[in-house]
Image (spheres, rainbow, N blue to C red):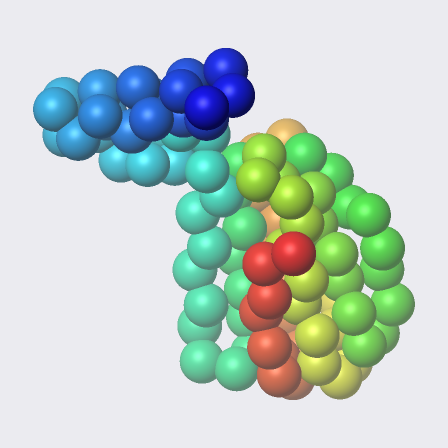
Amino acid sequence: MRWREVREQVKRKAALALELPGEVALDLPKIIITGNIQVLIENHRGIVAYSPELVKILVETGEVAVSGENLSLKSIVQDEIIIEGDIHAVTFM
């Protein structure tokens, strides 16, 4: 087992034991989807790609791709991005 995998297992066990949310203890993205019109992503690392059909966001575990039509960035702050439009899919890459 690699060091990174061991470290992640220890973090997960500690988070469960302390009853901490995954997004806090493991630096995982928290994603809130409101219908098919809005996606809020917390704990991001920046924007990888942006077009009206696809927005890719860098997160600790890789990328989150939001695909759809007429996508726009409603808000971008240090830890949070809000994407609006006609959302078709949210994919972890």
